[in-house]
Image (cartoon, rainbow, N blue to C red; front, side, top):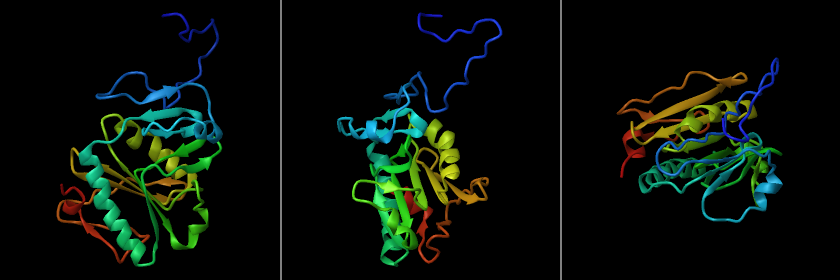
Length: 212
């Protein structure tokens, strides 16, 4: 082990690894974990360099800007949520909106939706408390996080619905909160319409979600 690596004395247990930290690159530019536990105030003081900066449970995670194809998927899903907004179901917000789930937990989903009866959580600089729907588009550097710790985090903090869009497989995992967690995700098939219980009168064909 190199200098500074965790070592244990006889009879001593090392703490488990924190789920948000990864040190190896997973294709493209890696997410950069910082081991020091941070707060939202620390995040606000960071310079804005255009990259996504999130703070899941005190671990700073910095991700590269999304690919063009991923941004097209976000735009398509924005059209769906804007229809829900125009129908009076709530408000949609695009990427890089700070969502403050706790003093040491801040996320920036690709897209989010807040139901009409909960618009009070929207503030000038951030969203305080969980949105009703969170959307993430999987990428090379975010896939492990968006399908691993993030669903657990969102469920624990009360996000009612979570969509994880996979550009490579052109599928969307649809998570719905049941009790204190999410059940098994649903997978709309080709030819199906993507719907949400938050706005049942609005839908989009799955093929249109991944249209270029």
